[in-house]
Image (cartoon, rainbow, N blue to C red; front, side, top):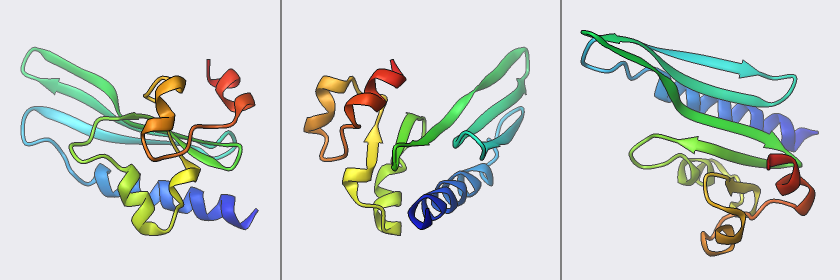
Length: 120
């Protein structure tokens, strides 16, 4: 349980860090969405730049089966290495935006078999 709480704290810290960076253009807000009951976390961009609508996920992270699943990472450098620097083992980070058969080549976790089936 301590590991889960630590991972929750790390994920929130990373998303809160990126939420501070408001785009220099338009009227675009960064919105944090934390579902701590289901361990789903997102950072959304919402707003307008002139006539163009912005609404999308910059970061989407889930915690399941004791691993941090990065579902989407729209940052320039990626958050996986930031989590490693915070102390999360690479085996506990799944780059879920890669197909399951490619994850073994990433140097990060591949997800458990049951978690892969749930994610599909």
